Image (cartoon, rainbow, N blue to C red; front, side):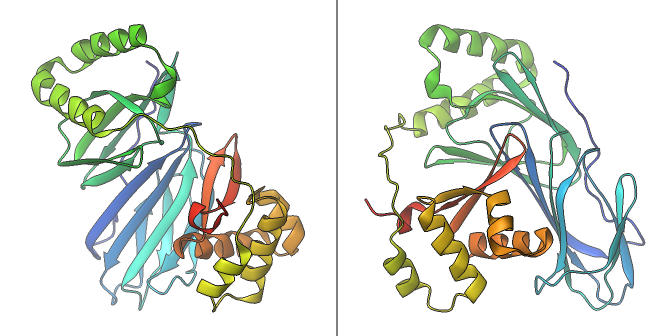
Length: 287
């Protein structure tokens, strides 16, 4: 398989970082949302952080109050003015951590800290190069915590679409790629499949319960309420580009607004064919 390999995000300088947390959220089209949170010494004026991938979209760098900080990007680093900040959060999309061969996808990188990996919904794990420290399957999504070192996870998205004969190929691939730790890794994969329930057909829900949403979320800003009303007009889902046009705000401002709504658990943001799709969460859709 042709697989991209990158170095772990590491705070460089003279160790101004006291702790860090790294999360990869993998999307169906292979894009990965990288979220790197650094707890830092407030007395250091700046830090350098290594960035993953050669291509990075929608870079956001903020402090513990979600306020933007000054930074400069070089080829593979971010030079961040961090004086007075106790936490720095770096987030961006990159397509360079995954590769695809046939129906198989592989996420491959190298990290120096425990890393949380969230695979696309309804994915089936084929092989792992190491035993995860934690694994959970909830609502059709597999979440793993991988130890420091090389990470290599092969998977098939939307595994329910594949038949039993293809599952035989899957287990053959496990035997080939994971032989050194076959017993442990086979158990992990069996555990995930045992925990996952068959996907149920999703009901077609196309109307936002605006009254319920506004009743519960009484402190929305005017521009946030405008987003909700527009999504309601679009039956709950719209491209981010449509929201740019509707709000007539800078792209960065709109993106931060949408991330606030996502953090408030009002909307979901997903990457699809290089465009963000914004949708109202199911709890605010009429059944």
